[in-house]
Structure formats: structure tokens, C-alpha cells
Amino acid sequence: ADPPHLDPLPAPPVRPGSRLLLYFTSGSTGAPKAAICSQGRLAAAGASLASHVGVRPDDVHYICMPMFHGNAVIAGWTPALVAGAAVALRRRFSASCFLSDVRSYGATYFTYVGRAVQYLLATPERDDDRDHSLRLGFGTEAGAVDAERFEARFGVRLVEGYGSSEGGAAVQRTPGTPRGAIGRAAPGNDLAVVDPSSGEECEPARFSPAGGLLNGGRAIGELVNRGPSPFEGYWRNAEADAERLRGGWYWSGDLFYRDAEGFLYFAGRCDDRLRVDSENLAAALIENILARWEPAVGVAVYAVPDPVAGDQVMCALALRDGASFDPAAFAGFLAAQPDLGTKMPPRFVRVVPRLPVTATNKIHRVALRREGFHRAPDPVWWRRPGTDGYRPLTPADAARLRRAYERQGRAGLLDR
Picture (cartoon, rainbow, N blue to C red):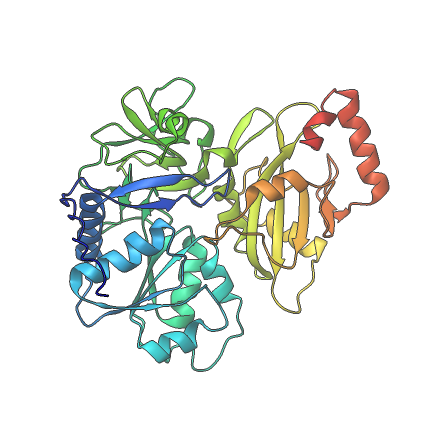
């Protein structure tokens, strides 16, 4: 018998406001959330980036970041779609296969997030490191030091940009952007750096002759968009929507500071703020300084509780192949950094074979903070108060430290 005739279901109309997809936040400081993205928002973002970085029809975009995240979709796939460029997909990022993939596909453009650039720099140098077709990398959180190292080694310029996964705020690099800055507010954004506790705009950043931030406690705040925001909400998460949109503003959840000319500098996630001896510090500022230490290929800075009040600075270091942690050399390096404030040197140093990262190659700070100095499975070195040198943290040291927390009623902070 003939199969029954089935009429096709009518296709719903597709408009700019029609929901196209859900993509997830990185989950580096909490559970990932599904951000809603419409047809119109994705198209506008792709067109803007294609114009900004000059995507051409003969480009080949190499995408090795996960396709469930905004970096791959908005910074990689959509600009290629707008310009009619080709796309080469890799199942997952691999530092060791990166250049061979680029050569195989004739890739000219790639995107990155978080520590991917550090992993590429950690691969052994070769005489043919510049034998490829790449002309540009676009991403975020590489840092000025690693971006310069990458260009010097591979001959490829990295363009740092900023755009929250939710689309609520964007910073665009413009001519004259100072070293270390991301850029200025992208067109259509009314961005401000705001003290979350008061709602007041933070004062402009002031710098020392060496480039150190002199007024971090008053200049660092949360980046907000006070104008119309393209943020379209989270999927079935009204609580997260309310946290993101407060008082008619979009609150990015990211720390920035802004200089007198309006250039914006990334300082980390709001959860990455440290309060040491009543002074507010940002993890990203300290990481950018520690990244200069030649043996290190990866650096993560995060807070651990102080026995009395506030936080202490802890860092995790991933070292180059064959390198070992030299406590005297590290202490000497810290003493030689002109922009390292007196409260920035790490109290604890954890030496790791590889930094823990999320699926989008961002540092998994939740895991690092949870393990702290007392649960870390790797070697930990520490600097006793009033000293400059580092020594191994022994079980006896850890026990004495715990008793100090107990005397202040703060031992529970270690067990979270």
C-alpha cells in the first residue's frame, strides 16, 4: 500500500527577534548559564566584527574553540558567514597540532580564549614557526606580555577584544590603544566602571612611570552598560536575569579600570577580586606581572582566606618543560618588578603540571580556590609573614596555619 500522504508542517516566520540558539557562559566562577541569542543579534555581531578586523572572502577561519560558546560562534563562525569566508573546524583545541592544522587548511584567522595562547607559546620552538598563512588572531585574556611573545615568535598579530557572552557590553580596539588596554566602548555602548557597593563611577586610573596602577582600590570596578543593551536574557533563569540587569543597567560581572582618555583595561572577573590588608586587588593585574617570569608558561592568581581578615594572594604556576621552581630566583624576580605593589606578591605558590581550565580554556578558579594551599595535590611553597623568601609548605606548617585560623574563628573558610 502507498504510504499515507502527510502535509508538511508550516514553517514559522523568522524575524530578527526570533530566537536562534542558546550558548553557554564559560562557568569559570560558577555554573554555566544558557544565554539567549536571536537571529538579529548574531547577525549584527558578525557584521560588526567582520568589518572591524577586515574579514575577506578568501580568508579561512580556524575554529578550535567549542561551538557551544560565544567565542567560536560570534568571533569565528559568524564573521566568516558575513564575508563569505571558509571555516575549518577542529573537534577540540590542541597546542601541538595547531600549526600543522593551520598549514593544512591554509588558515588565515583564528580565535582564542583564556590560556590557549600560553599553551601555544609553551610548545617547543622550531625554525619553521613562521612558515604558515596566519595573519591575525582575535580573542581575549591573552595579556600584553603573551601577545608580544606570540607576535615575535609566530609573526602573527593578536587583537584583543571584549564582549560578554550575553552580548550586553563590548569593548573595541581603536588606533592609539595603549599597551595593556583592550580599547574603548564599542559603538552603541555607554560603558562605565562603577563601584558595585555605591553605584558611583570609579575615578580614572593613574599610573606610575613604570606603568603600575597607582589607585587600584579606587579605579577598579565593575563594567556596566548604562545604555540600551542587546542582552536577551538567560534561558529559564529569572534569578540570573535580575542579577545581570539592575537599576536599568547591564552589569557585566567583569572588573575593569579606565584611564583619563577613556581606554579600558581588563582586571578580571568580579569573583577574582582580592582584598589584602584592606586594599582591593585584581587577579589579572598580578597575573600580567607574574607572566613575565621566563620559566612560567601559565599563571593563575586567586584569593585564599587570611587567618584574621580578608584574603591572601595565592598563585598557581605551570612551568616550561624541564624547568623547576627556584624559590630564590622567583623571589628575586618579584623584587625586580617596578609595578608590583607591596601587597601583590603571592603568599603561597602552587606548582602545577597544567592549569585546570574549563571547556573554553578559561582558568577554573573555583577548583583552585576550593583546594587552596591545604588541599592542593601539588607542591606548595609559601612565604612566612615578614619574610621575602619562599620555602616548601610542610604538613607541620599547614597544621600551624590551621590553628591560627581556628584561633580567629575562620577555619570554616578553609573547608568550604
